[in-house]
Amino acid sequence: TQLLEQSPQFLSIQEGENLTVYCNSSSVFSSLQWYRQEPGEGPVLLVTVVTGGEVKKLKRLTFQFGDARKDSSLHITAAQPGDTGLYLCAGARMDSSYKLIFGSGTRLLVRP
Amino acid sequence: ETGVTQTPRHLVMGMTNKKSLKCEQHLGHNAMYWYKQSAKKPLELMFVYSLEERVENNSVPSRFSPECPNSSHLFLHLHTLQPEDSALYLCASSQDSGTGPYEQYFGPGTRLTVT
Image (cartoon, rainbow over all chains, first blue to last red; front, top):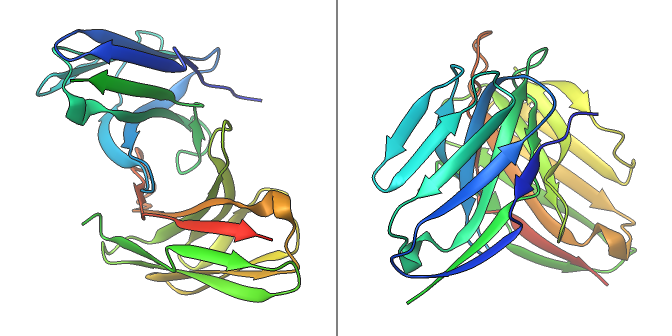
């Protein structure tokens, strides 16, 4: 069974602080996606990383795919209250890229 | 906004009721998905349709019955549900081109409560 473990599960920080969320697996993925979900809504796709070692930036968010394509991280610089939400990573299986394996999520609260 | 709509947004039903959830995607995608999201559990894939054919059925109880009449519409028919089926049901779509990555776009979900 492929599992994606996210850490931490919960994070409460002050506005302006930096944070990193981790997504780890023992399995190799063909690609990995990060989503943000707000209460009462569906997940919204933030980024897809495909190449081992790839780094993508989205404003204050930096996403990295591990060299071996087994892990990923999301770093947020100078967090804002608008960053509050549930962050989900999802890996695409090597044998079936339409099937995503989701992590259990990191719930982030950014206090003003 | 995301191009995937779901109705209803909230549903309360008794265990003997029959209801249906509807999903519509306006993105021109050819694959659609049903997921279940329960508290403190990762998203669970229930069904996948690609080119209107069911390609994945993850040991979902028969009280859940999917239907995909065309590539833009997906239904989830519900009957004789149990209280543990209460959850957020999410629909998603993607473009299956034969090569990855298949980025999935989600609807807002239907919050289902079974009483």
